[in-house]
Image 1 (cartoon, helix red, strand yellow):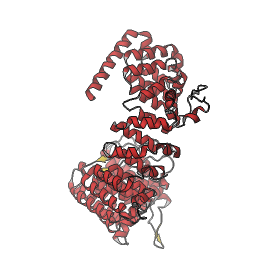
Image 2 (cartoon, helix red, strand yellow):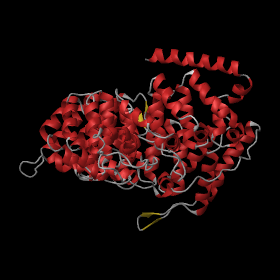
Image 3 (cartoon, one colour):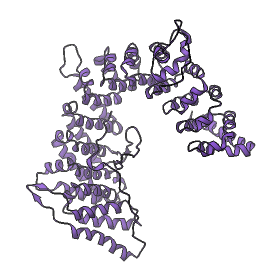
Image 4 (cartoon, helix red, strand yellow):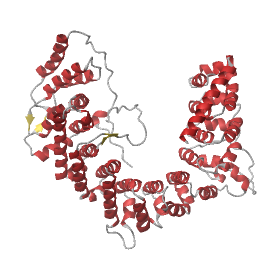
Length: 617
């Protein structure tokens, strides 16, 4: 599991509102004069950087203002490529000779990061070359820039431009940046520990590994507190890397492997090794298998207490456990079988109960889903299902259900053990209550609080306490081949409970899974049970989305039933911020005024959907 990247101090807060450019469309001479004047304005106010006691001083106020204006202009559109090229060239002319000072300044660093994607590869290589030069030793210059909290971002942005290598019109231009990347990699190989343990330097090494392998992550630009990002790992963009990178990546990984001991002791260095394995798995599978075997061998042969595998110790450590998560995720079936047989057999329940080790166990369960070793992993964890539930490590249970659904194995056994763990297996009448118990992660006695000696309920309890992991568990169980228990429990709920479930952020995903994964007959039973609640559901943020998902999977007759209930509430639906989209997407205005035509259109859409499903099936 990759760690979240720390926000740098200058990444806090939102981007400033940018004002429209005052530049109009004019003659070429006026355009050139305007661009040159903007660059010369900053140059006139630029003061020479002074050194005091050997320490760099930041940019003066005039220079900071200049680079801030440059950053604002870069955020606006250029009239054409010529204007953009001239602007970039003039700004880089002002940077030349003092690139280090600019890169190490907060404002200058942000501006250079914006400038790199617009500059040619030759210009990017020239900026990097200047960053490496100085009075200090060559290796120290690479470390000073890469490990600086501001300049390190410039280095990352420059390295990332190698993804444009195949688009470069001239090999000479691309070679300038290529040589700088190789020089940085050589500097890292000379002293890898200093780089990978450093808070900022490790980010440069991570980007370097991506570039050498031939894939780059998206730039980290928008760091506003309210900015929304896609969950999960970043999407990588592949590119055709130079041949020299192929050999350099192998040399760099071999050098890093000589310091594998650092990766299991230092959290920052551990992330570098996780990135190394991830990109190697993507671009160099054979090399990745070698790296995985080397890390597994190192972790499995360290000294430990007699009769105890050292791997069990590493699984409970914060830094090394994250590395082992990646090892489990990327391992072949042979390596997984070896790790389980030699180190993990008989210890999985204890590890699942540990506050740190339960996360690698989840990765192990996920990785083994399609291999024979899964049955052994399942049998061992299944025996400790109730203690794991009591500890609250629901991620293990959810992953176990997900793997059962994916592999098609052990589904009946898991369901029976869950019924037993939630105390609703006996008497059989209790099984109709399993869905609320799974959703709330509460046992039968706790959820209902009062019951007779025979187990029959004295009163109905409204659906409540829907939790995230409970929702994830039921969504996994909904993918089982036999869903009769879940469907029976769902039909036992009151219509108001179905409305509550549909309008809940976590519960709506459960309803969507149960509706969309059911057959037409089963879907019809659920929708009939929900009759009388469609208007309330449509007026909910999550309910409206559920209703649209159910609509997309419903038959024409089922759609007609939903529309017939919604149509009389036109005023309420069209005035609601969520339901108005339902009214529009379901074409309910046509349903009210031109029902035969509406039904004809819906029939055509249903046939197209069925044909498409048959093609991809």
